[in-house]
Length: 213
Image 1: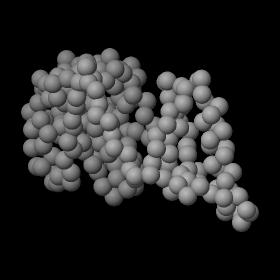
Image 2: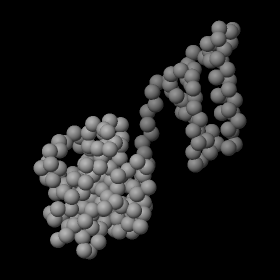
Image 3: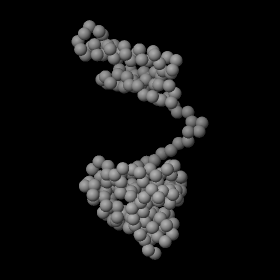
Image 4: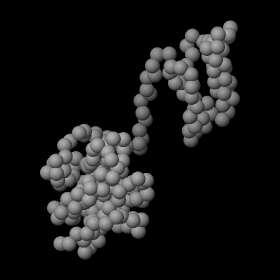
């Protein structure tokens, strides 16, 4: 079987999407996120590669700089495992990653992909961490109320009473600024800084502990 490796292009998006779907179903028991191939093909500062045989694309890989390391995402079509696709793909990405001038090359693979684990071990890779992925159904789920730390209150303001939230924020901020500047204005003993965060259901004010913001 003849294998060929080349740079991936946007024209490869449908074929890569099909490969990622087959891999996710076989190795992870789920479908990949919508637009997974396009997201990776358009990531800045990435080395992108596909491996082809006579039937089409059978491997896809991406490498990009992240801190002091280069991270790698590599997938081999489950129907083409054990045919040298992963070896060719990794060798190419390892060589290309040197251009980034980083200290390490990290590969992220699902634990269920035992073929990839065997290949990586044979190439001298070492396990540096294991990630626990957990999931729950949102159907008919009611999250238990979280206990807030002592002295912290959580208050939500909707469109009808948002002015009250603004007034509260201004009053507390003015008092804090006056205190820090040495004026006579008193700072509430239980003062907490506040930050504003937009949400889909009006706007929510959340206390942020420590200092002003």
